[in-house]
Image 1 (tube, rainbow over the protein chains, first blue to last red):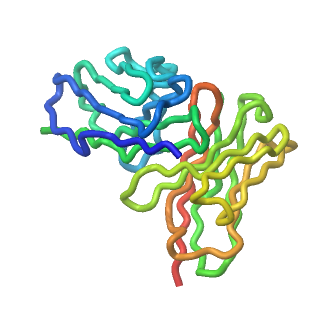
Image 2: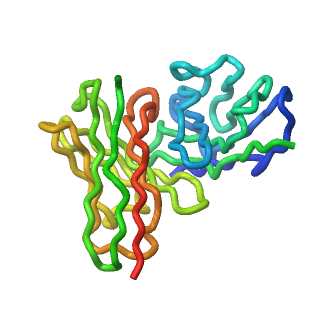
Length: 108
Length: 117
């Protein structure tokens, strides 16, 4: 199974700053079937990005995804107060689907 | 409105059985997969497996194969996750989500399962 490693584990930033989150796969992700989710305390995860770079319905354009093969990035161009949360990557191109361990974006 | 709605929280004893549910509405239930995801307290997301309600085709993560059973009743647009003998280590939040080409785009609110003697 593909192991996804997210870094850093925690990112401490201020509102308005740029956030760059990394997701590295142990082998190439088929078809760039890589998704990003946001999860806030007490809430279900929310899909942000699918297919490595396509924003899900209703997701603001400050969220962008990039990458292919084994290296993927989620960028939040300017952090809003509501963006402080935990972010997970997921690959769904190879069975079994797997998630990364998560990156917490916290207020500095 | 497209949504999946899960059954309520459960408190069980070790060794008991349990079946939780996930009802889809607002879309064609038989043409999307339903994925199940576990989140243990304070931990990350773990993909358990997925079922296609159209024909009940099921794929389990190796970590969960033999530990749980996924099923679906397409006549009532409902998917199920069940345990035959719960353990304390099954204590977790369980999410279902609609899954397809665009990954898991619609999530349920989660079902908290607590197993304690």
